[in-house]
Image (cartoon, rainbow, N blue to C red; front, top):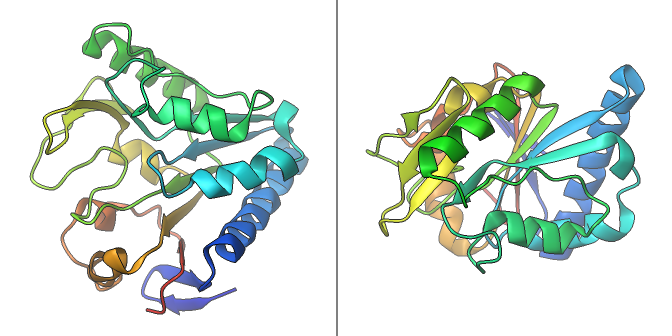
Amino acid sequence: MGSCLNKYRIVSVKDSFALFEKLHRFIMDVACREIGNKGFFTAGLAGGSSPKGLYEIMKDHFPYWEKSYFLPSDERYVPSEDPRSNYRMIRNSLGEKARIYRIKTELPPEQACSEFNRELSKIGRLDFILLGIGEDGHTASLFPKSECRTCGDNACISESPDGLLRISMTLNFINRSAVIAFLAFGDKKRKILETLITGGDIPAGQVNNGKEIYLFTDLLL
C-alpha cells in the first residue's frame, strides 16, 4: 500500500483529492471489517482544515452511517457554532447522517472534559483514529512542552500557543486505538514529518499502539 520506514507505513499520493479517496477507501475497509466482526465501528477524527476534503468525500460515499460513531480527537474551547470549532467543521463536512459526539463547550472546561472522558470510557478503545500533525509536532491538542491536565485516563485540558483552551483525547487513549493514521499534506509539513519518521521528540512521535502506523501524505518522504 505504501513504503514503510520504522513504525510508519507511508502512503504517498501527490494529488490531494486522490489522497483523500485512498484514505476514504482505507477507512471504509476498516469499518467494514469491524462491523462484520462486532456489528459497529468507532472512529476518532482530526479537526482543523486538513481533513475537510476527506470528510466531504465520506459525506457522499460512506455506506455505514447507521453502524458508525465518530468522536473528535480534540476541540477548541469555543461555542459549537464558532468557525474554529472542530465539531462544526466535522458536522458540516460529514453531513447530518453521521453520528458525532459533541464536546460540550457550553459547560465549564473541567466539566466538559469529564463528560468527554466518561464517553471515551464507555467506548474503551477506538477501532480507528485519524490524527493531524502541526508544524510544531503537536497532534490532537497535545502540544510540545505543554501539560495536558487530565480529567481521567482518557481526556485532558491543554492550552494552545495562542492561549486558547483545548479539550483532547489523552495519549493513553489514542494509543489504545486499533488502527492509527496521520494525515498531512503540503510542503510546510515536510520538515515535521521527517522529524516524526526519524523518531524526533515531539508529541506526535509518542503515538504508538504497538502496530504499524499509517501516514497519508502528498509528499515524497
